[in-house]
Length: 92
Image 1 (cartoon, rainbow, N blue to C red):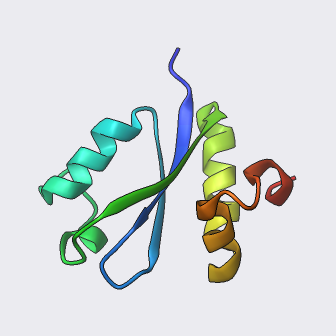
Image 2 (image 1 turned 180 degrees about the vertical axis):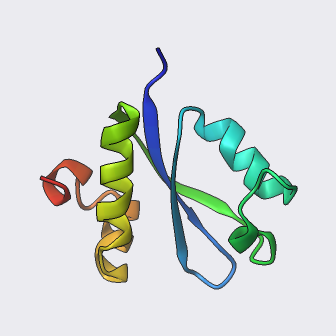
């Protein structure tokens, strides 16, 4: 069974979009194409850059981690995206 991943995408204005998926490359392509399968939020905010991805485990863990990351401050998310912080340290 495929593992779930958490990913973050930087948009044109510098904000970070966070999501979960089993296939990061496929999901990023869906967002980048701007079609119905991509996020409405991202459609008008291109270009998009994938800045972070990490395996999480099962769907339940991924949803909990996504929620925790979405509640982090922007500076903490930036440090995570740069690799200066580990996701495991933030979501214990």
